[in-house]
Amino acid sequence: MLKTARSSLRTGAGLILGSVLAVLSAASPTHAQAPAQVVKNLGPALPHRAETMRASIAFGSEILFGERPGTEPGRLDEHELWKTDGTDAGTVLVKDINPTGPSDPHNFQRLGDTVWFVANDGIHGDEIWHTDGTGAGTTLFTDFRPGPDSSQPSLQAMPGGYLLFVADDGAGQRLWRTDGTLAGTYALTPPGVTNIGIVGGGHTSGDKLFFLATDAASGNEPWVTDGTVAGTFQLADVNPGASGLHQFVFAGRGDGTGYFLATILGPGTSVWKTDGTVAGTAQVVGPQVAPGTYCDNIGIFAMPDGAALFASVTVFLNVPLLAESEQPAPTICDFPTAATCRSE
Image 1: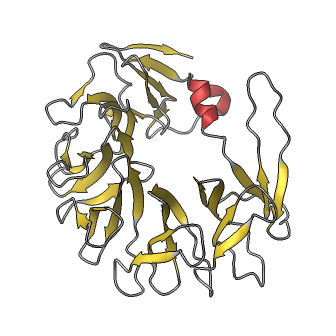
Image 2: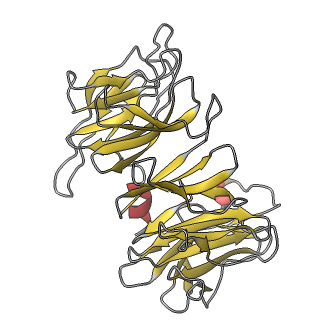
Image 3: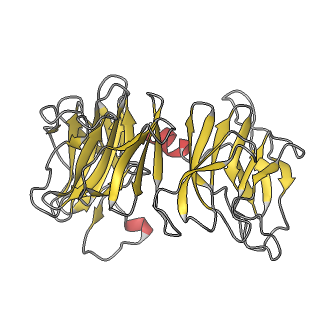
């Protein structure tokens, strides 16, 4: 299970090597994997360097992506919005969003018949854009923070047909919701809640999004939202006081419930379960990770039977790094009701 989970993080629809777009064919268990084929050469290869797509998303029969080769003198369409249907002729620039430099499109999310993303046109800073896959249909949603300063948005599409995003409109960072219209865009978190991590650190389960956020009273603690103002709140004060958590790793079960790892510098990592309510959020009873340790970001997986598989390579704080041969084996813990742990 752990090896499968780790391996799945390394696969993808395509990659850029140097400045060459290549597509990999997925192999079935009974067939050999087909060799990678070059779809389109986006520019001369660079020595001693392999680059990846900045970001990509499937959109109908095509893939939209932010091209990210190395710097090539004379090319102003680097780091721009492209699309491919897997053929040379069908791999084209959608729009040169920033004619004077890189727009760096990333954080692609699907909302209805459009793809939403973050880009910089050189005038408005990093802001939210959307596209229907055509140049004419690729436009700025709004200059959320007016002027050249970035609102520093991050996006997360939700199952209910709306988009959650974190952005600073000049009055401070907030969590927002939009249905794709300006009239249907409003804030979910009150002023003063900051460091809202919904990309990378945010996790969905059913119609809920679980994330880490900071306020002055509690510090960094787990929050949840169901896309409404009333349904957006702090789940628990795991580390009472203003310090909060060092790390939050969530594994959802797809029904609005899940498990999470909560790491406090010093005491270490503990395992919690939640049903998305304050009353239903509690630390799991059973053996915990040794004090003074923390866990990597692929450390917990929710299982179909309601259990959680927890995996951690133990890392001791304030201790010199060990040679690879001296590193401790991963610790695997299963949490149905109580925990049992073993080394692998």
